Length: 343
Picture 1 (cartoon, helix red, strand yellow):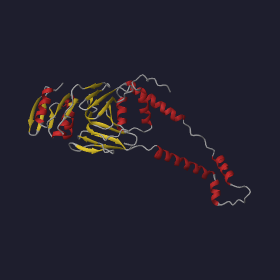
Picture 2: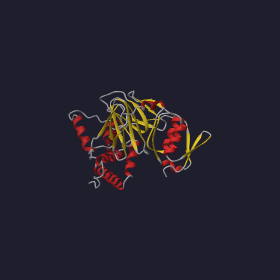
Picture 3: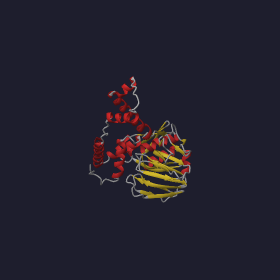
Picture 4: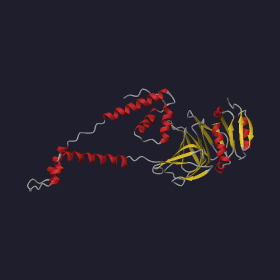
C-alpha cells in the first residue's frame, strides 16, 4: 500500500513509530508523543490512518502454513518403528494415534512456541519513573549516574537501561551528573531535543507547555540535537555554555557564559524560558514554599522568561509582576497577582 503523505517531515521515522505502536512496543510517553503529533495537523492524521491500514493489510496476508498432521505423524512412525520387530500396541499408543489427540498435540506445540516467542524473544521492557515528592531530591540511576529533581519533574528509564545504551525521558527540569562510559553514551530525550553525553554534569529543562528546551553545561562536553533530526545537525557545548531548541527544531547557542548552574542543585537557581506563568508559580511554590495565586486564571497562560539565584519569594514575585504589568498584594502568607498579565 503506497503512502500518499510521504512529503511530511520525518515520514520514515513516523512510519516506524506507528508500526511499533501497532505492535505494542512503545512506552506510555512515546504513545503520548505519537498522538500529540497525530493531532497537530490533518495530514498527520491521514498519514497515521494510511500506515495503520497498511499494517492491518499486511497482517491479513500473513497466513500460517498448512500442516498435515496425519502425514507428519506417519513419517515419524515410519522412522521410529522397525517393521521386522513384533509390534506391541498399548492403550497409550492407541491414544496417540487418535486424530483428536494428534491435533491437540499440534495445538499444544504451537501454544508453547507462541508463549516462548512472546515471553522470551520479545519481552517488553518495564519503565521506572523518578519523582521528588516534596522539593528537591537526588536519585541514582542503575549505572550510578545522579539526577536531581524538583517535585514538578519526572525522569523515566527502561529496564533495559545500560544494556546497549543509557537513555532517560525527561518531563520538567533536572540536573544530571553522568558516570563516564565511552562505550554507552548517555541520552536525555525530551519534548524537543536530544542531549548526548559520555560523562559530564549539565542541566536540561523541557516541558510540554514551554516554548523551548534549555540545556546548560557545568562540566564536560554535550551534544544537543533536535529531537527528530535526520540531518545530524548538532550544537556542541562545553563548560559554561548553553543553548535552546525551539518547537520548530531550531538550535540556538547562547552568547552568555553560564556560571550559576551548580547552584540549581541547592534550590538557589530557577530558570524560566518562555514558561507559562502557571508553571512558574508552581515551581516557585515547590522550591521556596511561597503560595502565589492569580486574580484572573487566564493570566496563567502568559509566558515568562527570567532567572533567579536567591530564595527571597517576595522579591521574585515583585519581579514577575513588574515584567507582566501586574500588581502584587499579600494576604497572610499568600501573594495575589492582580491584572490581565499579557492579555
